[in-house]
Length: 440
Image (cartoon, rainbow, N blue to C red; front, side, top):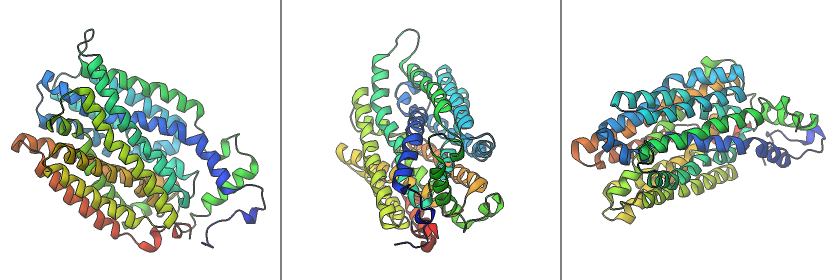
């Protein structure tokens, strides 16, 4: 048993930790989960729009790859400012603002006609969404102590898998059902119908999300005291909450950023090209492509929950994360070189499951090294560096296809980066990485 973990006994209050954090989770996670599902759909639906959009607009694969990736340039430039503004204005107002603007930009993408307009739309979508995930991660770190963040981050980022499960069948259905309907092409209907929900969810988030634990009415005074003790009691060993420079100088934060970069290279190289990979494997029906594209996300959800619970149970995240990076590399190699359709789809599924499934562990590890306003900056820094993976992964795939007619070389290079990501994980100090030691 970890004797250094804050306990409830000292409070002599009739509040159990499990009941308290279950109550908090049920109040916060549903709306945040739905918000992230919508964000993920709007981020990756361009992979399905590509199936008709490129032919209509006469875009090359390289144009598509660069346009898909330039989304993350907006991320890179505005992640840290966005999170500092979230700290200034509060989570409820700032996250609602993020959702309204990205929904609007997503809808306006239906008017794209030229490569430059496509680049501008994707860049502005990245600007609009910048700060959302690290903002939510920082927000949840104010409600949950590190020894519970593995499972909480896993539940949150399962929304990415849920969004992937939804976006495939939904996008395939929209593009089939709305083919040349009215004056819009099917890919235009896709951006319209999948962009509007963000504005609706933004209103709901504004109505139900509290800014801080001390402002809510659904926790009584004793519950607030216990929550504050458990969260603040794990942060005495961290840099001062207002010392952003200390976090920026932390080698461990930069190692985590590089790991997240390696994961993002794999994630976005695969997900933006999964519909194309499936089509090139011989599946031509758009609805069938959509259903098959959902399989990797089903596996991702299972991997995410399993890894989150396992890492919390064993008090160990480093080897869980390193082995996931290696498993993702194996999946990429299988995707590139498998001869049969089932094996290629199995490779895509394995790679997606390992990369997305292990992402919550990176965010949970961040709580070992930073807190407060500095954490808002640190999480944004990690996501900004990782955004480079979203930029270069899809672009490398498109460039490889234009130059050689195959994505295999790019996939193999990204698999090598995944192996390097595993080595970066092992550079983290094991004594600070375990779940038990996070509370020392």
